[in-house]
Length: 197
Image 1 (spheres, rainbow, N blue to C red):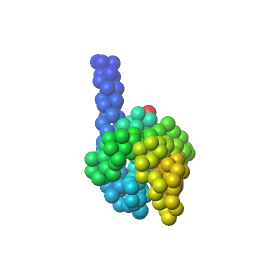
Image 2: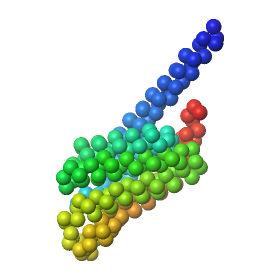
Image 3: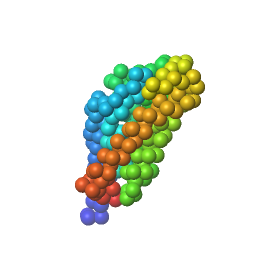
Image 4: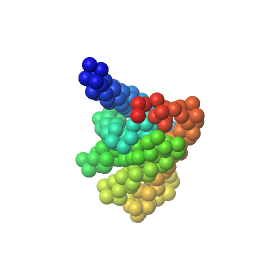
């Protein structure tokens, strides 16, 4: 009789694990969406400095690559719908929202690593920058020559590097600082030590 119940108990634990993952994804993606409205600085052609990336990276580091990528893709979709979607055609919507935020989930590659939140932040943010850079070179090049931070640019590659690099570097630093401040009090949570193995 007890042996018959074992598969049922195992299935229940798996279902609870998935339910918890989805619940945390919903909460942290919603938190990221709310934080995205609190902008430290906003650039004229899109791109802003916020702390919104931290909850996404935190979720990815806790749950791994696939859930992280899915949560970050969901956030990108919400940004496209609710954040005004500054875009230059459908290609820009695709690259700057749906594709650009998804790589933040690559932080999930460093799940349960003691230093994973830091390396995951750098990797995820760098990959997001690469997508924005490609968008700047291929789609927004129509805007050059233009001025960024008081400097006039005629080269779309340099323009995209400086423009996208400036706010992405600030966002990366912000996420790293928050990670450092919260690492000790949230260490068990960040390293997913509270989850069933």
